[in-house]
Image 1 (cartoon, chains in turn cyan, orange):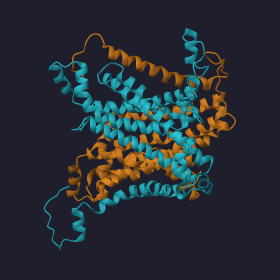
Image 2: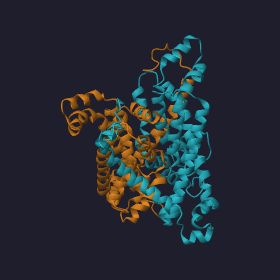
Image 3: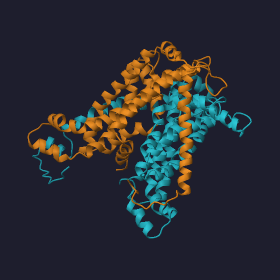
Image 4: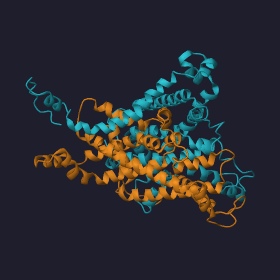
Length: 307
Length: 284
């Protein structure tokens, strides 16, 4: 936008003055997008917040707290509140693993070699599988009669089939399979934005691979790592189908989204469902803020990537 | 590519071996899952043997009838196409404004479009579904399409904004000098230049919409279930769910659909580049 000379004279029409600040009819193009965002996101969201302070009579009676009965129930009812911990126990390690594992893989895949395209496609493939198919596949492949257990039994490594699905481990597998490709794509795009001549310069000055990684790549990658962690965490945090299908829905993997859906679909308590849903958002926000805080502690300066 | 100019040691470093081992494990799991589902879907019976005894394609016929798949696939494709068309029509003009103009409140608008992407779908999905039910739209196709627009429109905007930014504004200025009006600039100048970007965004939205589970699940019902939701309902139906092979057949149909779309998508767009473009908008 040109910030040319501003006459500032009262004779300039209102239209002209608005146009100078960037407000002109072209902004109308933004309107449909805004309508969608407001009608389908802002309005329902505020409506949901309103709902949380209209608890059902049963809730008020059971938990007290007047209009805040839903929140009291959320924090006091161990069946509900434990799900926060259960969700974190799945989402944090899964996101951490996905990010940390993608770094070396992306570093190796930076080089040009034969079969690179094939390998990249293999890594991207799970994105198409979706959680439901992954769940079905895991149940068959890693189940009691599945090929993994069968192979391990045959080799003689184990005497009993391992319990790999319908528990915490099953959901973890599913989160890694769906989350890793996503983290890998992001990390490799950040890595490709780091100027290789920086590393070459360091190498010329005699830095070993660990020093190059520690002093050059890592600081430049830190913002990308934080962003990737946040986005992977968001994915893992809202785990829902896999927690039900390959997890132990009433036990180890009773995650928040399952609790929210239970209140919504099975108990028809929309107010409580909205409360749990909002608290999910709040918990996620806490983690995001914590990660961003850590990031600013780690490294201050220009961002890496393609900045 | 990045470091291909660096000298290469003859023997791979241990770290490289470590990475390859991890990749192999991941590949084995991935292929195991895929192959297991495909084999299961063609199997007659499969209990405690390496492979099922006998192969059959009956499962597909049975699944097709049992789940009224004709209808489900029709719904899935219809919803996806509608969502793609609407989100492109709504998202691209908005992306244009965000890429080219500077106006009061721009940051707030950007944040508004970023929020649905960053929030867990359930967080806004449940209030949204409640609103849908209270308007009497529950379990209808309209609701499924509307709900899917919430993440799709911002997605189109976030991917298209950097794409539009890289088009030289001088081209538009030249067109205006020659007397073109905004509408003409859009149809004659921008639209042809934007086609690759729009195509990429559209395919990604298509893939996402077909794969989206949480939001669709909250508002859909018989007659408006998409394929993923139908599979989920099949797996969790009361009384232990449907026969495993039926679900496998469904899953294979689903994956085949997705794979075709992905192959088409990869012909048009390099995923790593696209993510980089998205990222640039986030960090600006």
